[in-house]
Each structure stands twice: as structure tokens, then as C-alpha cells.
Length: 109
Length: 116
Image (cartoon, rainbow over all chains, first blue to last red):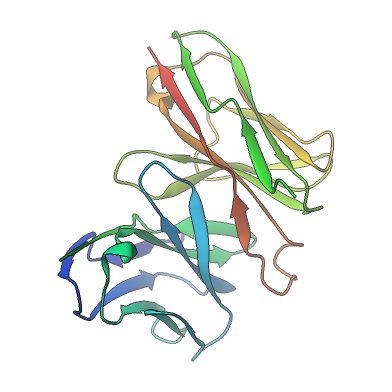
């Protein structure tokens, strides 16, 4: 059974600081996704990572994938309040996605 | 394009009642999914469909049934609702599946269901 673990589950940051969210998974994967969810809203796709060593960046967020370590990271650079949300990683295996429990990020002034 | 839509947005049921949640997508996606999200947790897959007329069980299928009679619609049924089924239900759709290039999932706005 595929297990996906995110850490930390809760993260409080000050604006301007950097931090990394980690996503570990237990078996081989076809690909890995990062999503963002605002309170009471649906999920929005951020990144799709297809292969070992893949790195994608969008604004202050950068995602990477190490398939050998079964690890993906979501790095936040110079955080701003607008990044406050819950971030989920999801691992695709055999056509089905398994989600982590999410990391709730709060960025404070 | 409307993307993925869900009906209804909110619903309150009494234990033992039945209901059907409707998901519709206008992106001609082959794959469709039903998830539930409980407080403090990620999404758990209930059932999914790889194409019209086909369905498969996900991680937590018990107490739910699904049908995919048309490519654009995916229905989730609760035959006899229980309080444990109180949750937010999300529908999603994606490109062709594991052999597709990205298989990115597009999510609907969610249905908030309370079972008393």
C-alpha cells in the first residue's frame, strides 16, 4: 500500500523567510503532484513532476523530485501572506493518486 | 469552459436517506475521480473511472456506488447515509491516464455533506 507523508503538517512563517516542505512516499511512483488549497476552496494544481531530478518553479515556489530517495520538496522563498494555504503532495501509482495529509502554511507579517 | 462542476454544493441528510452527487466536466477527459476530504486530512479516493461505462474501487469505497453512463458525467451515490459519511466530496477529472503526458487532475468546487 502506497503511503505518502508530509512534514511539517503545520508551518508558521514570517514574511520574507524561506522554508521547505517535505513529501516522502513509500513505493515507486509514476509522477508526483503538488496542489494548493485555500480554506473552504477546491484544490489548485501547482506542479507536476515527472522524473528524477525534475525541478519546477513558479514565483516564490520551487518543487523538486528525487525518485531514488522517494522524496519531493516544495521550497518557499521570501514568503508573503498570499502564500498562506494548505499544500498537498500526491503520488500517482497505477493510475490512482494518493495524497499526503497536507501542510497548512501561515505566513505572518 | 466550465471545467469541473458539482451538484449540489451543500446537503444535509438524515441517517438512512439516500442521495446522488453529480459531477460534470466539459474538457473531454477520460479519467474521473471521487474523493472525500475529512478535517485535517488529505483526499481519499472513493471510486474512479477510466472511461465511459467503467468504474473501479479506490481506497474507501464502502457505502458508495458510482456510475459513468456518459463520458462527461460521474455520479456518486449513497444508498443509506451514515454520520461517518459526513465530509466534503470532491470530484476531479484528468487527461488520458498513466500513459498520458501529465495526468494533471482538475478539481470541482466540492460538495459539503452533513449526515445527522
